[in-house]
Image (tube, rainbow, N blue to C red; front, side, top):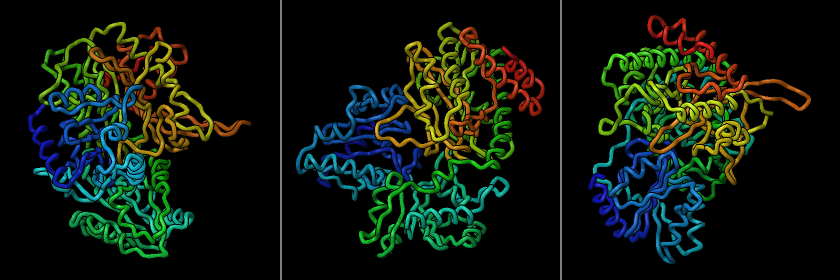
Length: 599
């Protein structure tokens, strides 16, 4: 652990003392409650050294602790070693949550601070209520982490661009009209949006302020009539974008002007916003006399349902993405066969090179996970120049990667057998595949949600006393964030809402299995919800698999697959071959032929 982490914590504690603050909570968040953050808001990483996407740091005068989930346990243990920061593993039976940890350490008259631009209004209320009973005050008006941060990166300045009209199915004006209709239904004069993917989708704009996510920093204030204001960094929009926005009644203001604009609202105005996706500091600017209507952003649900035109674009993207993967995997095997020194880092390079050759490619949709053998037991492992494994002609390589294309976003995981494998590895890979097949083949009644289907993917593992600690599926954007709500496939959680799966929703299906120190398995496809049939019991839905890339049968134990599972796998490989063969030639086509041969 870099000794500078201790120095940074010392500077932070000095700042806390200056302001009379007894504890500081630093979540991984920005004013838009994004999953992935611009460097300017990566304070938790700066003060802890832990760079996972999920986790919160709490600092007191003499203690510090970091909370994260099972995806990052091993990574956090490694990155926190020697820092003096205790790791608290969330989700375990004996885990203590941050609020309970704080309640045990703070007393009446003491103060917890959290920057108001790094916590949702709904979460801040829960935190305030929980600590108020102990006489602890919560301040959101201090950004102590920012104040003590030496050399804090500036805000990003990348340009905002229009999404290519060739790939846009619905105009900006139409989306805004639908939004205003939803506002009127809820009695709102104004609607405030801070979630970046909602804003990008609604205005048919894209950016690159967040790595791998084609979004830009902005707030959007929409009135119920015909005007809206986009609060975005000065100079980030060119003349063409400005003119197009103006034609649809969207004015521009500086990013920092959102506060004064909200403060200028007057009664009897009413404003609609999502308290779970709105930073406390932003919501605090709304005058108390303005009526607040707290509900989900209407655009979030609309964005999740892809149109038939968008799905057709995604299908074409999947063909090109699949062809790129086949070429990369073929080249990887050739390098190993020729004895060329190859590491996990080279896998990333091969994938990038092949994807970059594809039409309408923009970039990666997330940092590639190329994890060999025991590395794959870390669900979010990332090889670095300082720490990576050389590949050998044996064992398993897990490759989780994705691309951003103008016509869609991809996310796929495959497990490759680089040579001899063990019976345990083949058994585990097959059990995970059985779960994927079970969910992929499912028919379910209209109105069913992801948590109601999650067990289908886990049942084959449960029979062997096995399980995994992450969700089974997440929504995926349309040339937007690779993780998108409101739907998801995960175990039921107390108090969590059940979002029905609807026709047009795009989701990953990605069961896994992780054995620390040995290996990790994850198979992942993207699928779209489709109409299946209507019976006397109502309408039923199903999944159409969109991802096109063979599974490595050398990593499987075919004897564990039933007749219907074999049929599904063979049919899938026939579909993959028919779609990709016209795009391939030479060794890559031969590789495809081999890997798509029926069991």
